[in-house]
Length: 220
Image (cartoon, rainbow, N blue to C red):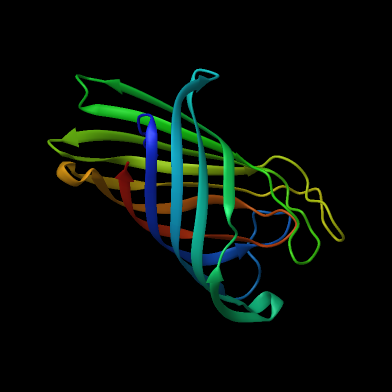
């Protein structure tokens, strides 16, 4: 969840999300039976940090184009399915980031927030807006840094469409990250592991699991 200085950036994420279980709609209780899944994705993210401030935070915009392979087994709903393809393309007109440093710049903390507006899906349902907060607390060990990271997601508005409820999903995770810079190439390599410790479902089932992410960051 580090916040880069003003400029243009490419971030390539190789992500594996291992689903341990699914929350029942409108609750934080698991669906009955054995329910699991995996999502593997290569997400291409393009970020522009403008150099301007908004509400005291660095303002930027972003676009994300993911390539996704999903495998799900939800026995409670009779679902067993695998598919691959281009995921939902995300355009983010509002990215806010804060970075603070202390202890002679060997320790750092950062937070990155984005707000998402969703369109209607193939079932005619428009999911509610979503607020995501990513954070990190790190310490430098020479060129390498390591620390605690986490994320939280909240749906802030109701779903819209046939058969939806007023329940809003949320999830929270904590983990660890290692960052290794390659200064001559203007590249950062990152590896992180997250464990979701809380998840609440909205209109539909909500997955809960763990995530492994490898990231390449290139500045332009």
